[in-house]
Amino acid sequence: MKWFTHQSIAVMAAIAMGSSLAGVLSAWAGSIAPDVLDQRKAQKAFFRRRAFNKIHRGSSHWFGWWMLGWAFAKAGLLGPLSDELLSWFAAGALSHVVLDMCTTRGVPLIPWTGRRFSLRICSTGGIGEYAFLATAAALFWLAEKNALSGAFLPLL
Image (cartoon, rainbow, N blue to C red):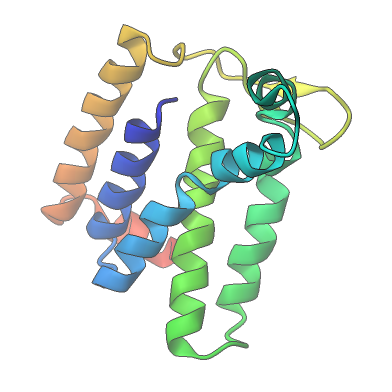
């Protein structure tokens, strides 16, 4: 998925679930974190683009790391604001992984094994991605109007 889709869905989800502004901004930052990590790692290589293509959607796109961060935040060990920021950051990153799971390339089932999982709903940058985004926007709009929010609030 494109960054715009990742960011839009993470922000819409955070707003629909009643997050504070700090939480929304944290979800926005987390929504691109897996790709930013891959970019930073690839910058160390001489052929950056080739390195990025090789490592992209590798271990940084494994849901387990982000679930651990989210669970750590939910344990309440850092203090209210830090826990909220980490929780929403991890939720944004988790949304990134789930969205990339919807593409034809998928995400790692287990890091470093080469095995991937894909729902094959759309291709990155294709018309399907934008239809997916429009559908998600409609659902989050409904959730924000309290039609669905009761189903999502216990999650975060």
